[in-house]
Amino acid sequence: MARRKLTALGILALGAGIGASVALLYAPRPGKHTRRKLIHSANKALNQLEDMRENIQDQMTDWVDGASHLIVTGRDSAKDIFERANKSRVGRYLRSVAG
Image 1 (cartoon, rainbow, N blue to C red):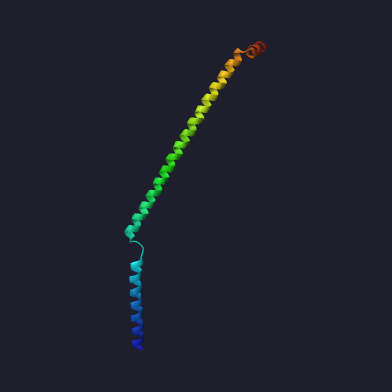
Image 2: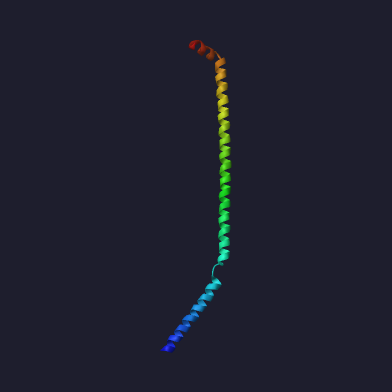
């Protein structure tokens, strides 16, 4: 009976040893390599976020510049229209009626 337990314990130890060896052979990369890969992935993600931020900032600047141009153009057009209307017959009539 003791011999049987010893044999079973030996087989268990042999199986555990074989299992540990196989696990080491097929284990994922070492911790140092995994940490390096994680840092690389995090840096890559941060770089992509920085690029996105720069693209959004450039696009917003372009939109603001375009809107500013439209506002200035609209203001100048309105000013020109009012000046022409002021000089026209309608403008003279409106001044005479108001005045």
